[in-house]
Length: 84
Image 1 (cartoon, rainbow, N blue to C red):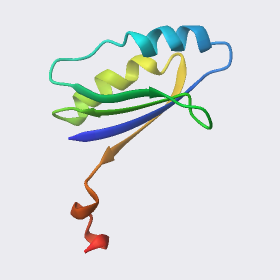
Image 2 (cartoon, one colour; image 1 turned 180 degrees about the vertical axis):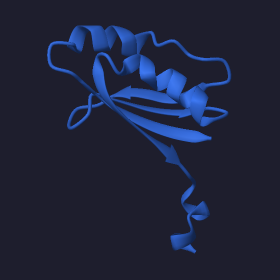
Image 3 (tube, one colour; image 1 turned 45 degrees about the vertical axis):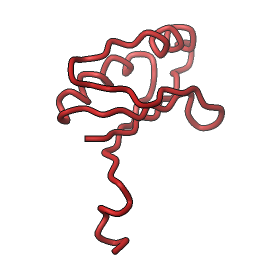
Image 4 (cartoon, one colour; image 1 turned 120 degrees about the vertical axis):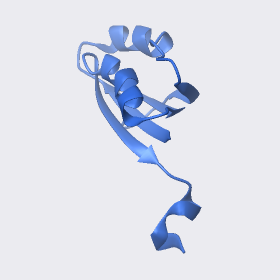
């Protein structure tokens, strides 16, 4: 399963967020495709594969004390019914 997570560091937590973004704990079975810093509405974006939602949650919950986190399931555009 493919997931996309955006994160915005909380006020006063930028240094801690950066440290965590650089060295996250990666659960078994999870593969990070891209972990990038951004300028704009979010501070970081992660695209990753996980075998299930529980593993995805295990990964993303570690950021919740330093950032506002939003995770979405990602599907190839061809798999969406409204694009057929």
